[in-house]
Length: 263
Ligand SMILES: [Fe+2]
Image 1: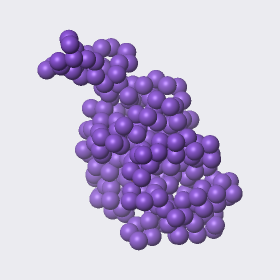
Image 2 (image 1 turned 90 degrees about the horizontal axis):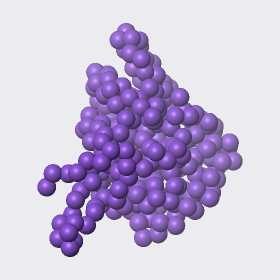
Image 3 (image 1 turned 90 degrees about the vertical axis):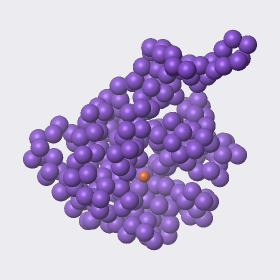
């Protein structure tokens, strides 16, 4: 069945048809993402994590970010002691290469870099040494295992806050061990942790349960940032399609996102 298109209105994902015999999928007019201005979560530094493998790919991705309406990208390579032993020096060298290439092309986009810290002992050490890459208002993007809550989770939050950092939990909706207890999201907010959603969670790209958790977080107004978590071009193509999703409209229209404050 051809989807119905409603302009500038929010509907639930399904409206029951006559006698409930069929469902009409609601698709909205694609939203202009330029309202976000800034993306704060991506993997664009060439060859240092599971994101862009080379400079040309990074430039192709950045060009696509520009066409989606972004004005600034804060890219966040993984730092994870077992897999990606990145340092501020390694990340800043890659950032410089990208900036030089963008200057040659005279593109109107700003590129900055921080990191996506995996919550391990190495991260705790970096916090203690005050050797942490931040963005915006001393924000630190950090992530957890998808298997189980890290034993260092609470300690990391405490130490970050003690050190004057403001923790931002990456793709908070993607941790399956909280799917039976949504109260965790509110708890984290109450502890001063800012919450970042992935745009592609809203299209069900990760799992139906991830999508449901993201929608709950939006319904409760618990989010602070929304990011691309772009590793490759398919992620940006999915984001382009997600622009028609009612929940993306809802989060963009909320007035609560802090993305644009990072400009
Ligand atoms: Fe990421």
